[in-house]
Length: 148
Image (cartoon, rainbow, N blue to C red; front, top):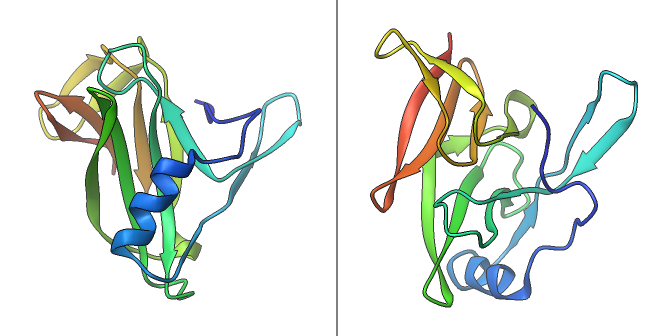
């Protein structure tokens, strides 16, 4: 898995404004990881095509009111020249969570259904005590329990 946002760490202004309308004081949570080739990557958000329309969609983890224990995951899915906003899960802690990009065609195992899934669009995973992969289907995100 990799972060799709490598190469551009600038969130579109429209999305920043949408976040600011709901959360007056917020900042992006920064994630870093090391690739197998030892290259270190730092990213502030995930971008991919979650709904299959060939337009970039975004997922971010934000820290609300500068509180590392009060983080929210928000997804922005393009639709008809605007973004639909989704709050994913509840509160997260910076120190106990991470996000990663899942590319279309990746294989995931869903522990809820006890079956392997091949992603038909880009998705993202949030890891806390367990992992949940979020896949966009029929105008909402479906949760796969992708690790225990």
